Figure 1 (cartoon, one colour):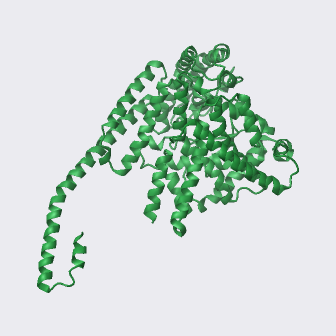
Figure 2 (figure 1 turned 60 degrees about the vertical axis):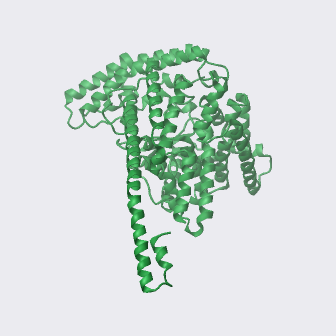
Length: 611
């Protein structure tokens, strides 16, 4: 009982009795406070000690991470390691593994119950990150440093765009990194060779034609190399003498001619003659060394949920059936005479649905993205400062690349984020899916989400620069759904295109688990995706190969979107007229990238605070 409650119950007493009761009540309260104060002080001290221990742990690990991964340091605006590239050899992998094991022991020793609530959330996310690093080592995933469309080679080719060039030291740092490119490729080649020896490789079927990504960097003139881009201008930057500039240009050309091009030539030979012929014939992750445990680990990692592969497969089948019914309703609305398969064939072959040139496709994408920009204030209170552009997927990547992707840029750079649109093979890039693709990759999807997360300076850096697929890709797919409320889909065909993209992500739950857990063949996966979506057959092939090469990642989209939709419905029903869609969306993206159970906790706390 509080002091005020005690006073409210004394209205029947005399003045003398009332004064006596008052003095007694106050004395009791003072006594309680005198006892409680030392206890509160002790609790405060425990909380301060736990908080300080946790902050020191985060700082120690983050400094280690920046030192071990110099490209990450560059991305975050830390210049201290800009003259180095990441080491990937086996010995270094072991050292990192040992360090992260020690970090987990320190995390276990922290008094979690006395941590502030925000620290408890951060600790949950931090432990997930560190466990992910440890799993990559235990399952030897580092021996497969590329997928069917990206990898270490594409990341290195973006160095010229991701590095700062503000003063003389920046150019010296870049040349130093360029000089280490040969060592980096050789180390990756050695890892892949070790992978061959134990069966830890990509499947052979997804590697055909991928050597072109390496051969594209084998240029006859150094100035034609992507790595020469920082020195393309004949005019020196401000503060740089002409002699110094010309000296750097000459050094860059020499390194490209004598080191970069030869190492690409050797890696292309190794890839084509040694790696692909000896790669495994099986497509299933469960056939890798310790493969069953590895795939279940990938399911948990990419969904952030405690689900088995069989459970995910079943959810996928249910979603496929639901979306198929919605797709059929649009076919009926259009009055199309023919089967579902006939309608898909019509969409894949009718010229009205395809751009005549790369420029037309890019212009359509830019127009959709600009319309989406205009709709953002109705759905968000907080918008990012960093802009984004629309550009084609680089030629050397395009043949085996997905239809589009978001490529972020460091906030410290002069580069915007980019929404890449694949202009290769135009008859495989239907316009009816372009609105959904644009919303997913640009805004309100990945650009808005990534830029806002990076611009939130109050979160610890391990969260600010993290990307959890279940959250990020779930948000991207949810952004496609938001296009309905934004008025982006203008025709029944564009609505069908949105459903095709949602069906595509539902099919991923079935196909990924089918391939890696249930023994599906590649052809069965191709037939399933082609038979349920209006994706072009070229894109069906590149997508299935992507799932084969990147086990589990495809599960994140639909599981994340289902969670966000469920939480929105819960907030709408709980808050009624007090529900504010702009507040809700700001809450979601303000989290940065979080596991889905953490997102659920945060949304429920928000609901309680509003109630």
